[in-house]
Image 1: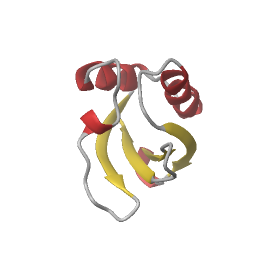
Image 2: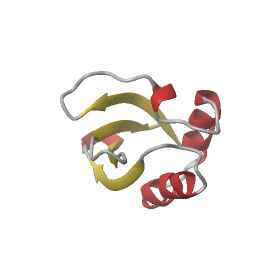
Image 3: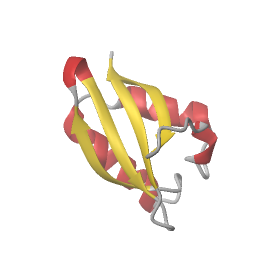
Image 4: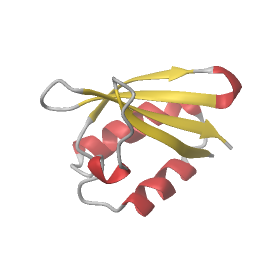
Length: 89
């Protein structure tokens, strides 16, 4: 189970999760993230959301950090990079 901790630009500017979601609410996104049971499914889950147009950005990389932290790198249609941090609960 994972929880969302931060969402920000490549320059470290915090973003609202509402900038990421399209056809789902932020609450639904949090529920989807909480249902991910292992780190191998993180990238595929977010790419499935992108393919189904439920989020705006495509997940291109998932980096595992220390202490159960994971950072997902997103790329939008303009080439902007954004990051979403998840914490293993």
